[in-house]
Image (cartoon, rainbow, N blue to C red):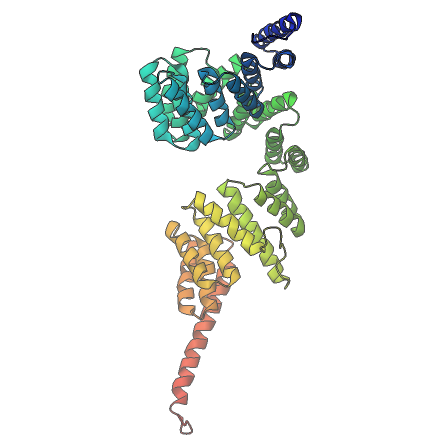
Length: 478
């Protein structure tokens, strides 16, 4: 007998604990449900259903790695159980173990080709892997079995959204809502897609609909705050981030964006305080170190600027505007060092100097935004400061292809030509730049460069003339 040797009283107590756990789980009291299940499993650790239930409770608490262990234990006790296998594969996806997830889903398909969740949930795995054609294939296979699966439409909508097919994604999510009106976060997802399409009023309507149904969803509140910032409604955005912080005072992103709003309002000291608070909660968060670097630069504290920028670099900021600004700031540090006749400091864990840091930021930025003239311009400036004149002219040339009226690219390309003894080319660029900058502050600097070009050209002409005269002198032994 399976339970032979176990006192009936203990077995009965374990059953009661498991039943109580189920009631608590249904009531949303997850921690208490988990405690009851753990007690039941201490008494009878060989009950696969209870390990499975514990995995479900851990999933609901977003403790996915622990849930994986419970599902694996349940599967050892009940090999071939489709529900356990499916839940395990889902959590392999959630924990980034995509190969194991696909392998498990395929095993479920092998055991029962008509088990629809094996296709439905595989859509998520393939979407996260970037294999969208396979995600669509899974959707159509699932449709053949259960054409009214709301989750299938939701999952393929996510795949379409990632690909930028926002209108099609909205259509899929609307179909989900038709099939399952209570499906969570449908209005939130539609709001995000409408936002991406630039349909601001529609996005706002769906955000508000989602929040009316789920007023405590911090993800939605936070994203709605970002949306309001994008609309320029800073006061409403501040209120949303404050709400997030009421529920979660350690929310690093909310602290950062409170800093952004304070900075927008001219409250610089308060902004810096929010940035430092956000870093105390998460020092890997992109953004705060960059803002602190800007603040330090405004006060001429170059050592702090460099330290903050290097920290921001470690946090892998993926905003091309920020990366371009960081690159230009590293260039300013390098120029400051050159003007002070000091070696460029900043040798760090990256093993490179400020010009290398600048190049690293700018090359990452140009990968994300190859049509930005300013990024190519700064790459040209970095190359010129390194003495790589041919490379500098190439970058300046790319900037001018994108933006023919880029005055700084014309000006600094002229400087490189002057440095290489080509005053004629420099003069042409300066003339073009002066025409474009006739009413800007660059005029005086361009006049100086034009004068230098003229002097260099006169010097070349004089040297040529002297050579011609020298060849005609009677004492020339030539």
